[in-house]
Each structure stands twice: as C-alpha cells, then as structure tokens.
Image (cartoon, rainbow, N blue to C red; front, top):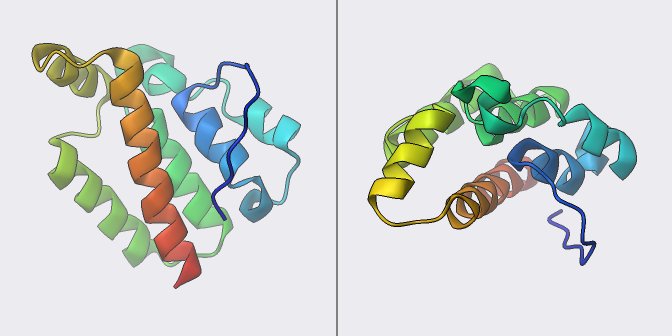
Length: 120
C-alpha cells in the first residue's frame, strides 16, 4: 500500500499520509493532497501532530475499529512522548534533529504502522 513519488512538491506531514493512502480514502492523489492542507503544523497551531490526525482519519475511513485506532494513538504517544506537534519539534531540536528529518521520520513511522494495521 505504501507508495513513493519523485515529485518535487512539498507535502506537509498529513498530506504525505493522505496521498500515500489515497486508495484507502477512495480519492485521487490531488484530492488527498487538498484534504491534508490544513493539518500540517499541528493543525496550523502546534496542536495534535498532523501525522496522528491523518492516521486516525485514514483508519476511520477504512472502517478500522476504534480500539485499534486508540492503540495506535497510545503507541505513538509512548514511542514519541507526546502527540503535540510543538512538543515533538522542541524535542527534536533539543536532540539536534532538523524539522525535516524529524517530520519525515514521523511520517514513515506512521505509514508503516498504518500499512501493518490495514494489511492485517
């Protein structure tokens, strides 16, 4: 289910997941890109990470039970210490990790988790 693209377009964290899982969402890549526009940067205010928001929406639209979605949320929080964008970025900065490297890593981690859940 995971896809790769060489397009030189900037995707925020949520857009990256929405486009990668557009088949699950039942929409075109263009529509998936548009859907995620306002989810990046913790919904534009440093709140819940767009990776988390997008991941939960993808699971919902795929008909995955709430218990599995809650487990994903709890696992993400355990693995990364928080679900808040601002806190994730502060932690990365303290560790000397750039925003791009941090966010790309979170996207990849969530994509792998989603793929495992959806493939089960």
